[in-house]
Length: 347
Image 1 (cartoon, one colour):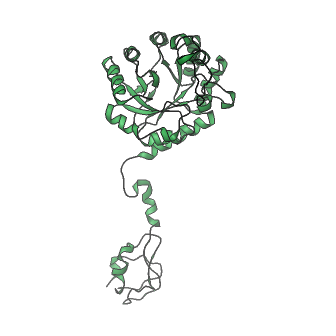
Image 2 (cartoon, rainbow, N blue to C red):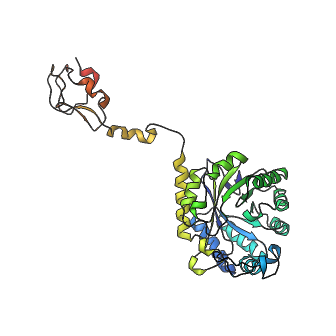
Image 3 (cartoon, one colour):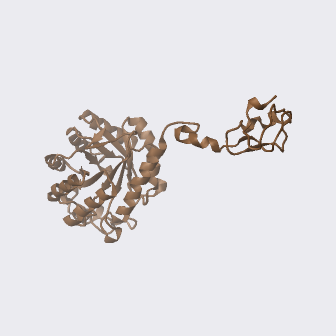
């Protein structure tokens, strides 16, 4: 499948998405700087989130609308205030996308309701992402799929049955290019809870491209994902974690993102195919194997002994597996020390 200029599949390097989320800290200048930094780091795409506090929740600051989890990065905030702080103003989308295009980046977004889809269609986005918490919002998935654009869905906490419903809804509504991302919906996520082995299972079950929406720290989970067939990696991206922001604690800085891109590409390059033996590039190194050599000057009629027959490097003589076979055998000519042993020197 293809998004913009990038082809996604096992025969191509991993498609790396830098997720801006709310790391712009409500500064358009910072948002544009994030786009530039992502391009310089080598990302293929920059992703936004398209919502307002009012399209996400109700303006209530108590009960289930208030976060009171000490382990949460957002403890002590209402959902409404959190989304108000984190959202990307809709009027910023056009300049951000323009900046991305000028820098050769693909820019698309995650809509959180139908109005966001309608708005993003006016900007002609090349693809859509469904967030892991919205995987059960089948009307939203249907609305996105009806655009005919490539669709990326984070699976997050979804059961196999819920993923199946989402995939069926998308395909029935016209989606032909689909990516499912393994995702652990904790922030930050623990590598122990990443369960990367699910990725090839998702590919087998749903016959689509697969990847990882990665909320862990570092690059280990992403590299492991590519090693298990991931063709898409999404990571939250910021200029500096020290600057703060709603997602900064589990976001990558530019120098880290460059390493992510380099190492996931290396992981992809290393996959190759099932192969034994030296391969084309390794053939030249065969000479450095051990082989059988004449270790002392010999005259015609002499026999091989442990003193004059040795297994050494380089590898131009007979294989060491013939060592015991050759002990006691006569040579048919004078031989200098350092002569590689071959069958035609035997009587």
